[in-house]
Length: 270
Image (tube, rainbow, N blue to C red; front, top):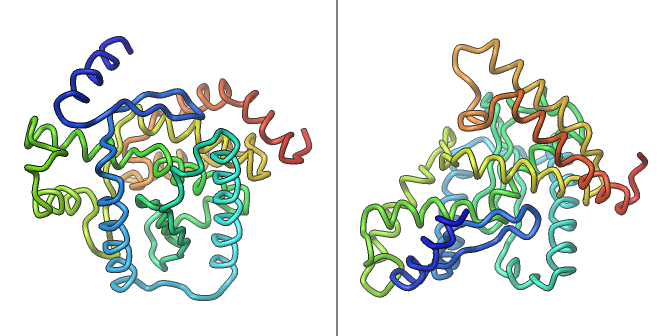
């Protein structure tokens, strides 16, 4: 952590970046304050292009479920950020929750709150609470700025001290974004690092609890996902960079007391 703080101080002086702290987990990451507007605009364009090339469901129980659970996760996020005086951080979010008819066992949330859930994951989520685990985790990636962090890292690696300032072109930015978020129904989302997945696990657990979903049900959900991974020659994209099941369960159990506090405050029964 000491090395990260030192690096952030040096990097901020060179590339107009700063250490951002996740308000729910305390994790610090290097992100550019200049990237968010660009990322949201590019995410919207890419999201719309992806939906145009996919079979998006307009009605049905799965659509109703995703929109309902998504709305509650969204509301919980906004309420929490307002309670800590950071509601402006979400002012440029334009939330959308869509279901794509595709056998992929996957879901994702782009910067700015653009969410897609594939029907292939529905047998694993099973119910609203399982869906809340997925949406809480994916929304957490967006709220924590993990896309900003990864792209900042990529830009620093490619362009060094010139990045994030006046010398980097829109074309260069677009190229890196395109690598992170390819177009198409079979979109392969940006690969988050292990520390970012752990961050999203913890934050997502708290978000689902704030939204009134029992966080204890997160462990059975991840066990079901792990079972799919074990019985498949290729693990689901959703699990590609995630912690191993034993470590994830131990981490979730460590976060659970705090999550249950949020759940109780939201009216949940313990």
